[in-house]
Amino acid sequence: MAKDQEKKLAKESYIHHNKSDEEIAHKYKVSLRTAQRWIKEGNWKKLRDSKANGSEQRIERTQLVVDSMVEERLTILKAVAELQKQKEWDSPPTRDAQASLDAQIAQLRKQAASIDDAISKWNKRIENLNKEGKLTLSLYMEVMERIFEAMRLSNEPLYMQTLDFQENHLEDVASKLF
Image 1 (tube, rainbow, N blue to C red):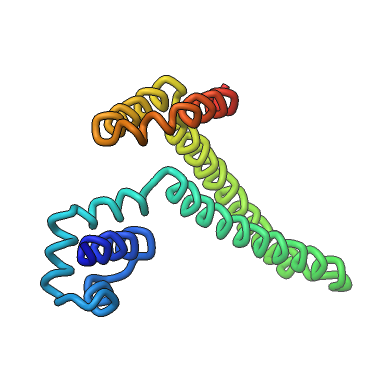
Image 2: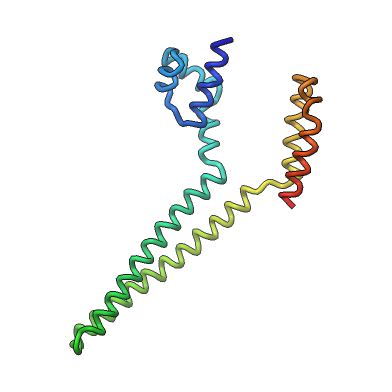
């Protein structure tokens, strides 16, 4: 029984806290081979990968890309402003200096426009990920029915204790999804 509890805790550590097989073995005082067997037989790696690549995580990673592009764009716009100030402060700039500054500003604006386009595309990707990650009420209800039916078959008294919860939970979800 104690080993079953350790295994459950090890699974939690591996999947939700990204602990390595070595860390699992050390923390739960089992051999490395035992930890590796638990991981393999329990399909823990697949579960951890699924959790790490969920819709929410993909959106967060995509948002980080957008954020870095926004920072790059702001840096470019500051450089443009500095070059424009330089044009105003030079008294009067030579034609070559003026042409050079204008070319630099045009190039920076072109880079900013390219980044704007990329940001737009990445934002569209985030929008699509949001849509992709949404559950329909019917799918959610189907999954919950399967879970509760499995509970009923496994432990009917527990199932009976959860009937009020089931009803309240589904009403709550229905009000949020629609």
